[in-house]
Amino acid sequence: FTFGSEVSTDETYSRAMELLLCRTEVLNMGVGGYGLDQAFLKFRMIGAKYQPDFVVLGVHPPNYERASVRFFTYAKPLFLPSPSKGSFTIDNQPVPKPQNELARIRQQLRSEFYVFALLRNAFLHLRWKIFGAITFLDRVDQIIDHILSALKKDVEIAGGRLLIVQIPMGD
Image: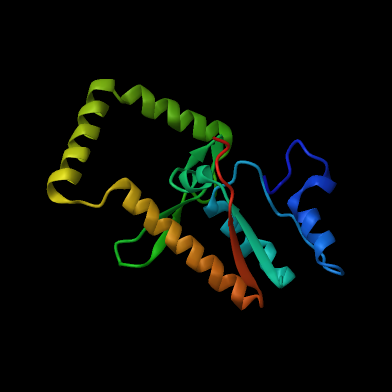
């Protein structure tokens, strides 16, 4: 979407913005398959130095899901809530090499029996229902809220404003 896979440069929405906003340079920093967490980290490491007037973040529903995993097509960083309320750590840093991550996943799958995984997940679900423990989606909501708040703050510090655009699913 943002990157412009399968379209020419003139068909990307970053190019359309550049044409609409005369005398404006628009940098397209989109990367296919990135989650919101990776987009935020890329802005922090690369984008902020350009001191942008505006940062447009296209959010597609799968981006939200990608922020909840440490592996999506390839290994990636993962934000985790810290025990101290309101703070977060970044796990999976430095990002492991693909062959190391594949070996870790294979080892994990070898040591996990389907029945035990099923029972563990059933127990977690029951615990959430009975005791109102924090659910997976609640945790992801906290992470996304943290990422978007931190991105907004970083964009403002760089002198710009953040615009979030929802990119709907094709269905």
